[in-house]
Amino acid sequence: MIRIESLRIELSGFTLQDIDLFIRDGEFFVLLGPTGAGKTLVLEAIAGVISVTSGRISIKGRDITGLQPEHRGIGIVYQDYALFPHLSVMQNINYGLRYHKVEPGASEKWVKSLMEQLGLVRLAQRSIKYLSGGEKQRVSLARALAVNPSVLLLDEPLSALDPNFREDIREVLKKLHQEVATTFLMVTHDFAEALFLGERTAVLNHGKIEQVGRISEVFRYPATPFVAEFVGMKNVFPAIFKDTKALVENVGLDLEVPAGIHKGQLAIRPEDIMIRKEKFSGNGMNVFQGKVLDVINRGPYHDVSVRIGDVIFSVMLSKNDLFELELHNEKDVYISIPASAIHVLKYQDIS
Image 1 (spheres, rainbow, N blue to C red):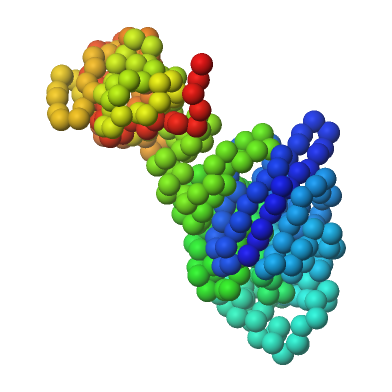
Image 2 (tube, helix red, strand yellow):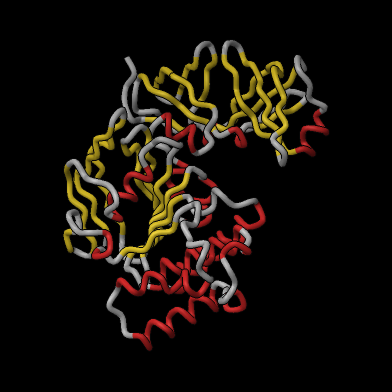
């Protein structure tokens, strides 16, 4: 559906480097990465609002690399809504139709359907100035979809919303994707949004793609240390491997299967590490005695740092578990790491 081949964009101080992507027809695809990774540049190149240094972009087999934005058949939703404050809700939604050759009756029926799906019918004549953030984002979605685009680009559509509106619009996006015959391509730095909405993802870092795959696979099997940390594997360490053994500094770990490499890195999700007051054992478990260094309140959970030898492990605990364990700095504890939870990063050997 969307094919990006060797896309390169050179700007002062930043280069988007040789991006290759294929996004399937009707897919909800997510471009993930931190601020400054180059995600929005990819979106702007597809939309035609930024010049491409080299490479090719095609949609449904049609090369659109040199086309003007209005000839690409693309809708775009920005994080700041980009609505016209002097126009009503209905006028904003219909604005893009003047630039597209559409049958008036069909477009009117489609816009009415969209407004019903997005809960905008009662707001049709209201000024944009008197809408909430969630309502503005609904109008922005309706305007982008009014021209019935083959591709809908979403540039951080939830980041400007407060938590209540964010959850509401997230549900709207999921429902819309299921009901309209449109390919969705969303940019976000929030992995939780990607997990809820997307099917596949590409993770960008410093203008390069680090990994492409199904979101569940990227979450469980990150390809690089950057991706591992980005998806929440806070415990990423250089390691030396021998068969089913791993050595991190002076801490030895048993693996579930042979690593297959001599040097590399391993990663462990913080929620996969257990903490106990007393020593315990179990099949396939790596058990160590350590000392609590820090406890940080993250709202719904706590981050606990535990030193084992020369290695500091990050552990995620619920409030209930924290209170039950009565954890505090310098407290002696035991941690357990299942061998099955240790992920070996095989992207390269580290010499």
